[in-house]
Length: 92
Image 1 (cartoon, rainbow, N blue to C red):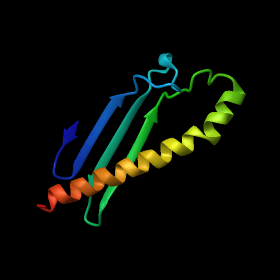
Image 2 (cartoon, rainbow, N blue to C red):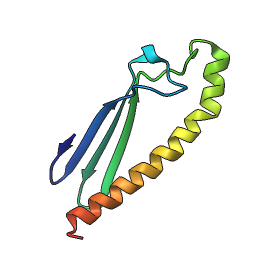
Image 3 (cartoon, rainbow, N blue to C red):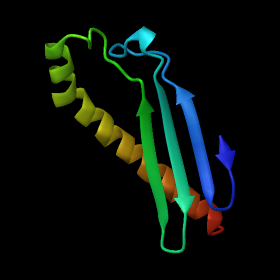
Image 4 (tube, one colour):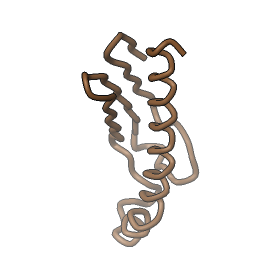
Protein backbone atom coordinates (compact mmCIF):
# COMPACT_ATOMS: atom_id res chain seq x y z
CA UNK A 1 0.00 0.00 0.00
CA UNK A 2 1.22 3.49 -0.78
CA UNK A 3 -0.04 6.53 1.10
CA UNK A 4 0.33 10.22 0.64
CA UNK A 5 -1.69 13.39 1.11
CA UNK A 6 -3.26 13.13 -2.35
CA UNK A 7 -2.85 9.45 -3.20
CA UNK A 8 -3.55 6.02 -1.75
CA UNK A 9 -3.03 2.82 -3.68
CA UNK A 10 -3.03 -0.89 -3.04
CA UNK A 11 -2.43 -3.95 -5.23
CA UNK A 12 -3.10 -7.45 -3.95
CA UNK A 13 -2.95 -10.91 -5.46
CA UNK A 14 -6.21 -12.78 -5.95
CA UNK A 15 -5.17 -16.02 -4.28
CA UNK A 16 -8.32 -18.03 -3.93
CA UNK A 17 -12.00 -18.41 -4.37
CA UNK A 18 -14.39 -20.89 -5.85
CA UNK A 19 -14.63 -19.16 -9.21
CA UNK A 20 -11.13 -17.93 -10.03
CA UNK A 21 -8.78 -20.13 -11.98
CA UNK A 22 -5.76 -20.78 -9.73
CA UNK A 23 -3.42 -20.48 -12.73
CA UNK A 24 -4.67 -17.01 -13.75
CA UNK A 25 -2.23 -15.02 -11.58
CA UNK A 26 -4.95 -12.41 -11.02
CA UNK A 27 -4.40 -9.20 -9.05
CA UNK A 28 -6.61 -6.37 -7.87
CA UNK A 29 -5.48 -2.76 -7.72
CA UNK A 30 -7.33 0.19 -6.20
CA UNK A 31 -6.09 3.77 -6.58
CA UNK A 32 -7.52 6.85 -4.89
CA UNK A 33 -6.39 10.34 -5.82
CA UNK A 34 -7.67 13.48 -4.22
CA UNK A 35 -7.92 16.61 -6.34
CA UNK A 36 -9.52 19.96 -5.73
CA UNK A 37 -13.05 18.75 -6.43
CA UNK A 38 -13.30 15.35 -4.78
CA UNK A 39 -11.58 12.00 -4.50
CA UNK A 40 -11.41 9.79 -7.58
CA UNK A 41 -11.10 6.04 -7.54
CA UNK A 42 -9.97 3.54 -10.09
CA UNK A 43 -10.14 -0.22 -9.82
CA UNK A 44 -8.18 -2.62 -11.97
CA UNK A 45 -8.53 -6.38 -12.07
CA UNK A 46 -5.67 -7.96 -14.03
CA UNK A 47 -5.43 -11.46 -15.49
CA UNK A 48 -8.64 -12.70 -13.85
CA UNK A 49 -10.09 -15.84 -15.42
CA UNK A 50 -12.92 -17.92 -14.00
CA UNK A 51 -12.40 -21.65 -13.71
CA UNK A 52 -12.99 -23.21 -17.13
CA UNK A 53 -13.15 -19.65 -18.53
CA UNK A 54 -11.51 -20.82 -21.72
CA UNK A 55 -14.90 -22.26 -22.72
CA UNK A 56 -17.21 -19.69 -24.32
CA UNK A 57 -20.31 -20.75 -22.40
CA UNK A 58 -18.54 -20.46 -19.02
CA UNK A 59 -17.15 -17.05 -19.95
CA UNK A 60 -20.61 -15.88 -21.03
CA UNK A 61 -22.29 -17.11 -17.82
CA UNK A 62 -19.56 -15.48 -15.74
CA UNK A 63 -19.98 -12.14 -17.53
CA UNK A 64 -23.76 -12.23 -17.13
CA UNK A 65 -23.72 -13.06 -13.41
CA UNK A 66 -20.53 -12.80 -11.39
CA UNK A 67 -19.11 -9.71 -13.09
CA UNK A 68 -22.18 -7.80 -11.92
CA UNK A 69 -21.85 -9.13 -8.37
CA UNK A 70 -18.14 -8.22 -8.28
CA UNK A 71 -18.97 -4.74 -9.56
CA UNK A 72 -21.60 -4.10 -6.87
CA UNK A 73 -19.45 -5.42 -4.04
CA UNK A 74 -16.40 -3.57 -5.33
CA UNK A 75 -18.25 -0.25 -5.61
CA UNK A 76 -19.58 -0.62 -2.06
CA UNK A 77 -16.03 -1.22 -0.83
CA UNK A 78 -14.71 1.80 -2.77
CA UNK A 79 -17.45 4.02 -1.25
CA UNK A 80 -16.47 2.85 2.24
CA UNK A 81 -12.79 3.55 1.60
CA UNK A 82 -13.62 6.99 0.17
CA UNK A 83 -15.69 7.83 3.23
CA UNK A 84 -12.89 6.72 5.55
CA UNK A 85 -10.27 8.72 3.63
CA UNK A 86 -12.41 11.86 3.75
CA UNK A 87 -12.89 11.38 7.50
CA UNK A 88 -9.13 10.84 8.00
CA UNK A 89 -8.06 13.83 5.93
CA UNK A 90 -10.73 16.19 7.28
CA UNK A 91 -9.69 15.49 10.84
CA UNK A 92 -12.66 13.50 11.95
